[in-house]
Length: 138
Image (cartoon, rainbow, N blue to C red; front, side, top):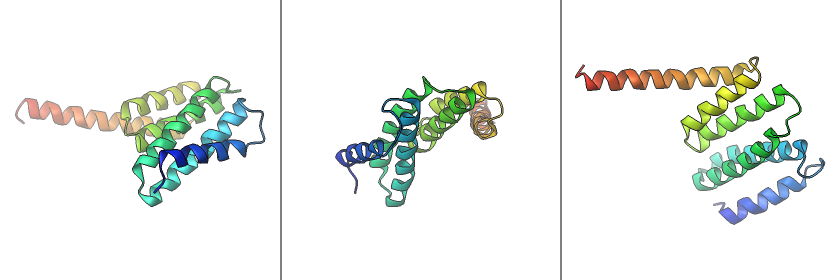
């Protein structure tokens, strides 16, 4: 099992691998990418606590990179990744939807973000319809 201290050690190792200027867009993007990969790989161990910790740390670097994104497509892709982490690993569909919408707003050509947003909106519509049927007894 991987614990919180091991996530911090992995984070230090992964951020140290970047050849970019520390704290720059590229450095934060590299750190976010590496921690996202770590998050995904932890799923093979079924270590949900470590997976959530790695996803949370990846979000820190995503947010830092977003503020310095050099173009709309880079910002859009960061927000797509943010949405995926929120949805799949942090179980926060509301934050995921906000991130996906922000990705589409930054770059309307981001079809992956648009599809993810559409999927979550469809789930909301289905849940709302189900709740309406229950409240009317139907």
